[in-house]
Length: 450
Image (cartoon, rainbow, N blue to C red):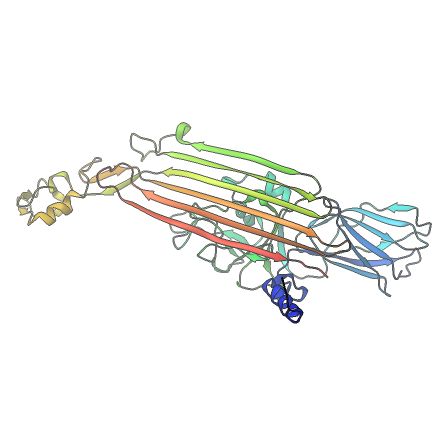
């Protein structure tokens, strides 16, 4: 292929402009964290030009930096995870600090003191004062991976865990259930802000349904729990890199692969076999069939260089309930020209002893659409059901291109579902409405660190 070299800079510009989140200057709303601090000797004098490295325990990816003339170092754009800090300087023992846990958007300060000695010797520093973020004034709460995996969740809806944070309150509609404006799922208010004022980010990309203020599908839940590593709920005083809302920011980070393969397969089943009859139910217990299933798997494509993690979750639900509607009495039906008396059709509210005539065939056909009462004079008891089917898929790739600290990662998530409502007990004139909901496809390419 003959390529005009004059066009190469233009092509490169177009490439990077199509992936704006990989440019460092535009790296807003990142889920990554940072580690900073000061390195001193036993006399508290600062040590300049010391080599500082943060090694991700899961992937063995090494991020390096050096102290400046003030003995300070700053390692930025570190994906959340477990790190080991190593500091080396000629004339001092190598200092190792293991088990430094970096959560989403953490900004940790770790000051260390090195010991005189040979570089071949090492000193491991464990414990110490709790790591506290001192560079941000934000008020937030973390939901870590252990909480996501171990806390009970009805329907595997991990958004419910946001209700554990201070200032976050669940909001119920007039029927005492969740959901507003025809939407279902967890809806909450942060510090009294409107329920429509919350923003949801996965790996820096907004993920909401068509209402733009919830992540739930029509089934009323947010799938993909096995693809979430952790998330943070920012409720107040967060910085200007966030926007889109005046309430809270729920910042999630997806799971990434490591040097070891991990995965799981699951299936949850609920049905009406052991359900008790509600006082208002008819002779038949409302139908319930719910299958929640999925799998996740991740690991190395090439160890210490290329990683992946994929998750899939599906939901198939047939949820029945008991409904009691008012209908015309049985005596209100008839052919065109038929006489309907007050005694036979009290629903009309006629004067005692009076009657009316069904005027024409159109009126008779309209009345025939109503079923005859089966629960009293003008009450019809029936069991409609709602069918919902949702499929959610997510995959993430992490690639280290060079031996230094430059890396790039990409993640994508897709949700598709269909919801149906119908009355399954009226065979001749069934009422059926069907909606096909296609969730947003969220693709995030980020973190080309140069």
